[in-house]
Image 1 (tube, rainbow, N blue to C red):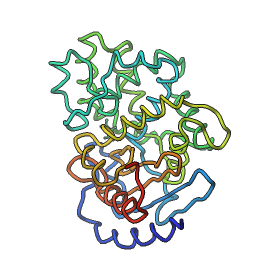
Image 2: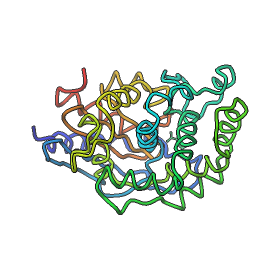
Image 3: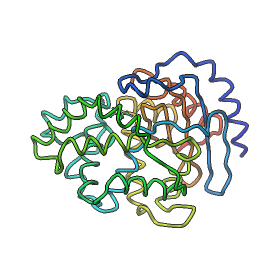
Image 4: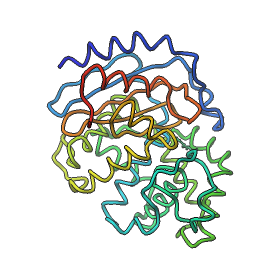
Length: 304
Ligand code: GLN
């Protein structure tokens, strides 16, 4: 199928949605991004790629990095990670504190901030140089050694991280944090500040579409079962309190970030990334969600 024609049409139509959402501004450096950006990139497992719009411009991947951190920790800990973090949708905003108190410091899932902080904490216990290890992992899965942290964004988030610090200390008080909270939040702010474009993120998601095996060098990143589980978590928790709606509309496992990126995939077939920085009230890219709904509808294919 010529996905290029499909995304050209969607891209043309959805530019009309510019101005309906709002760029994230609770991290000041994210507010500097030009709102009228819109890129889409697709890559299929049989080697075809398609792109339209701003697919070459790098942006802050933010919470999409939670998928990579979880994949890294899963490789080492396997099912042991589920002692420290749950796997149910939270039904709450991504940065919410409320459930932690009565659920004894165990976050609902690894994709809300509390859960991602626990995952980053365990990652730090596994690697001597966690920031280097994260970059190395991401560079490996997208086959590009030129992926870096955007230090300006990392610093800006670190300076405005009171809420994530609060989550970290609350979990530490319940004994669910192994490392120094300041250090964990610092590494977390860096992973969120990885800068990638739609093409690079799409490539980085292809190992998930390929059931855990990097299609470029055949390296086994995750087992088939681990890859299935990561996909199931994305489907049920990848969009916070809008996860049900994304599953309903797009029918794909995917992950969003407040930088405006949405990466998703069709198992056994392709990966797709959309970037449009204006967010809806749940902190998900407004045009990104709409693009993926139209895409799976137009191509008559999703996981359902
Ligand atoms: N770095 C962001 C934060 O912690 C990530 C949130 C997101 O992308 N939803 O608030």
